[in-house]
Length: 150
Picture 1 (cartoon, one colour):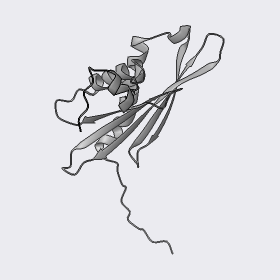
Picture 2: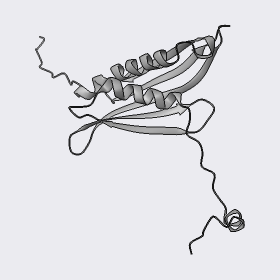
Picture 3: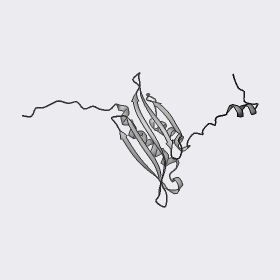
Picture 4: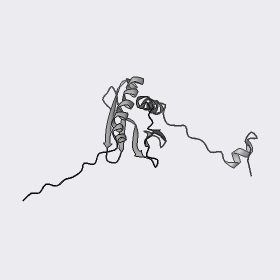
């Protein structure tokens, strides 16, 4: 004989649902700022895991001759902080470089998510951050404008 069992459905936090909409706003910003990159069109692939609060957007360009050229990735993580506020963390990467740029967006009543997605898209479009060159002690001693502290 079958018995009826009750079970509860685990719903993801409200912030997790923001993952896909944030990626959509990001893509719209890219298309608005650069509708024909390298005379081609944007090709994107999204992966979202609501249970883990993770999302990935792989960015490529389909060139006029049909070749797909990878450009980079946007990784999102949605999580609850210790004070029970939610945070959306974006990590930006670019193809051909090891550079990464992270940005945290905290959910507040005044947060404009479309504007935040536009800012992140603009940061990605600007390209990878410049690498800082380390100055060796020998180079520093040759340049009198660089003071060394002992």
